[in-house]
Structure formats: structure tokens, C-alpha cells
Image (cartoon, rainbow, N blue to C red; front, side, top):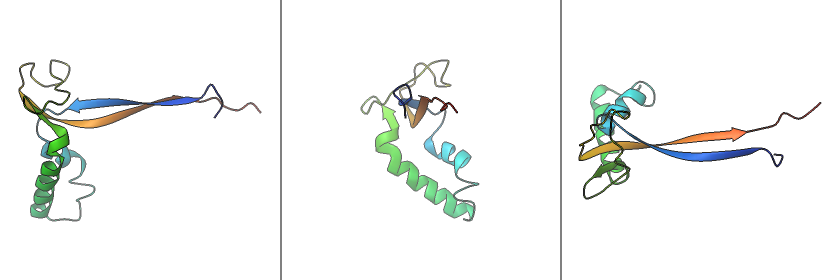
Length: 98
């Protein structure tokens, strides 16, 4: 990379409108879990949700980003919720001259 090239990581904690299992149903049920029967999928998603609870569930006694309001689909008076830790990559690069 030349001195003008760079890349940055920007944490984007994103609140979910429901629980983590709903997010998993959207993103893994028909991909990573596609070869499993529905009962096994449900058990695995329940297990993943519980494993993620310490880092992805926030409430008054365990605050996360707690992002609420009209732009998040989360009520402004929400007392708890789930969030996922998205990261945005932003960078620049310079095409070498010929």
C-alpha cells in the first residue's frame, strides 16, 4: 500500500427488532443449517442464542449499546433487547499508474 491508501474498521452495534433467534432464522436457517431437520435447527438456534446472550443482550443490569429510537425499529422506552456487532470496513486505494 502506498502512504495514501488506508482502511478503517468502524464498529456498528445494531439493535434487533426481535430476539437473536429471529435474526438466525433469517441468516442461517436456509444456509448453514439447510441440511438439518427443523427440530434440530430450532435447538441449535436456541443454543446459539443462549451462548451469545452475555455479549449480545442488553438490559438495565447489563447495558449494551442500548440504541433505541425511530431510526432503529426499537422503541425509545425499550428496557432490553438484542444487538449484533456489525463492523463496517471503509478504505481507499490508488490504482498504480501504467
